Image 1 (cartoon, rainbow, N blue to C red):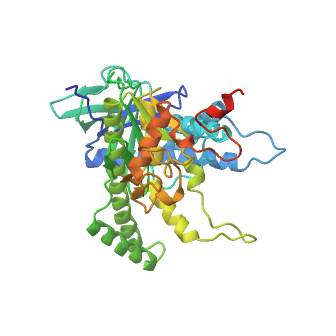
Image 2 (cartoon, rainbow, N blue to C red):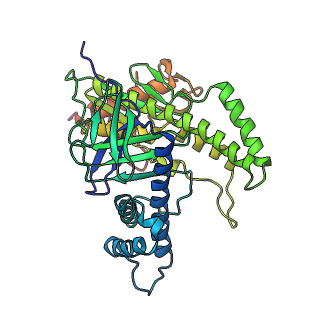
Image 3 (spheres, rainbow, N blue to C red):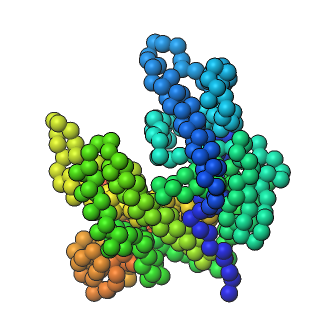
Length: 422
């Protein structure tokens, strides 16, 4: 049987701010000493300070004024600031310039309408910095499980050698998560997973109760927080509501909540990576519904003139959709199996019988049960929808049988009487 390497959630994808192309990163756990950790935090502080200065400059721009300074002008201003302030000049010029480069790319993404406008960075949240122009020999292996990387102004910092570091590393990013763990991510160009060549096609139906139902009958769920962890999270949220703003107790509670949130996020990322790798290894074609997740998770609260209805129920549904990683799963599938992911129209996939192609809303008896009112076919509702997605992608327009609204064409057998000539 063909073996396929399972990619962990540390094998992530980011947008390279250097060339604007999709670059993969392999992440490893850093093991800095206490002194090195203080130096890493100072690098993060310098990157955050420079970023916030760039945000402030662009915040003062108004229509009719001269344009805000670009990356080149900001680099010249940074050189003057480093000469004027010794604490800033003691830091790494690479860290500070790359923070400006990240901001320039964030503004380009904003004007390209793919991301929101960049905002202020806060201490303790999304800490990190990027190093470029990495030379050969600045990443080396010490033993079977230990490697080290050279960080400017700090020196050699050890990391856990959990797998081989890709060759040709030219840049890396150091980050600190909500748990207080440090990681180093080396940028490389990822290789797609080859197709098995069996011609197998699978349909994937994404849901809230079941994260992903496959046309093979498999029901996949995201590993969430355990019951004891959810109880502790609720207790911590109650403590946070009662804690005084700015107090040390509030800071400790927020840190404990962050650790639980990070644990939940790591489990979701790991599930997405393992599931997407498994599907890319087993099937030649992967069919998914073409869902507009951003529109589906939009708030229903409305405004003062037209307040929304069922706001709390809609908010719960939004949390369920986001917690199941709908978008992340399809994104990683497209990255690991390029040109092998098919997106189909999601209309009526949950109301159409996969056996007799009869469509009726009454056939879906509940969230999990499907019984066709025409032929009596019984199946799991999500699996039945996944089979319809699979057949539609394979060229059988199952979801369109029985006619579509708005006078769209329907797949019907030719009527014999129309061709009879008297």
